[in-house]
Image (cartoon, rainbow, N blue to C red; front, side, top):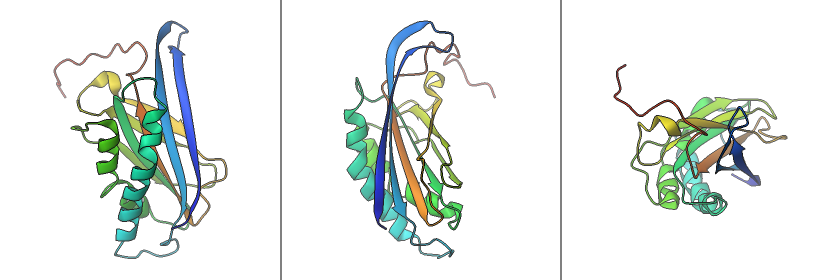
Length: 181
């Protein structure tokens, strides 16, 4: 599983959607473009992808956290699978072993790591879901960051995405009240 490239996206939000100033919120995504050894097949033993996801988490999450302006608060993960791959190939990258290095990098992680995966063409964007690392029901931290790599995934590649933030959405007005639905 060759690593073709990595991409780091650093986004600092200074105002909300109406232009009202807010405390700066930094969101960082790290993306790794790797070859998919299972492209064109539906192998039953996807454990090499489990291991590769964990390795990339170890390699890249510390870099993401170091780009934040403050301590990490939210996190998320996603994968875009090239057209010769299968959705399960992305699931194999993001679920079994990626969580542990992500939690270690953010110094916590009591909450489930929000995730997303899809099969897509070159240049396909994905909404990387974000949620509070320790408080699963912190509505103010439910967010997304749209990311993509212009020349990936090729048909036989996977783009692995990991994200962290140092704050909630700008001016959240959806409270953390009782859950009624």
